[in-house]
Image 1: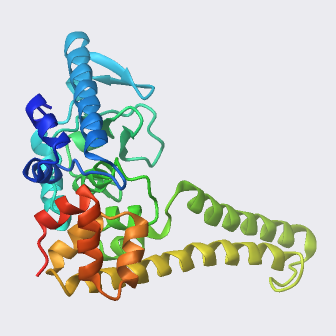
Image 2 (image 1 turned 90 degrees about the vertical axis):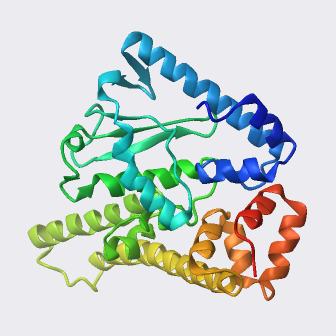
Length: 309
């Protein structure tokens, strides 16, 4: 990460907007509530960890990180990332080219295609992608470009400790209208476990019902209890998602009063969940934005990059 120089770190500590905008374009975003001093410290730790990782894998030819063994020969070429970088540039106006990636099948589940591994505590990140992608763009239902673009969004949000809109943003990288529409339905693994687990529970109850209870109607106890669990779990997840979609749409409409569509989308990507909700409810979005910029360097960077009209 030679682009993070000592000179730039000092300029960051001084609040230099041009340097902060330059880093923003590289997907190094200030997190909500993060001071320039804390951001500089995070970047310095990230640079140190990346340099150490590179030196160790080049010296040994392999390395173990996040309990996964990686080989230097399995490194993903930088040009493979270009299509994914174009997607994130067009959607959210950033391009990450500083995260290493590796082809590996180690610890890959049966249908697992890959992911970004990162730690907001240690300030480190890398990609692991199934080896099937080494020679082709698609594997099963997965696209290598979509997978990488999706995970690049998560890397850019390393400084954001929020889950409210995270998957919604990441799934907008999909070329599939269906996945873009419902991709943010499950915010966390627990959401999918609850919905799928309750569905399997109902299926199991129906098997027992057929074998031992003589097919009690689904609206009668005890089968109705299992059906209600599924309805409640699915209803909570879907209802929450629809509420988030509505909030996001209102926030985007407020910003469209001040900027074009692409900047509005990029600004919201740089917001915390609480900020998106506040923008959605703001009677005077201009006043809200300028007040934030007066108080917060992160918002001065955002408005410096995306001036309001």
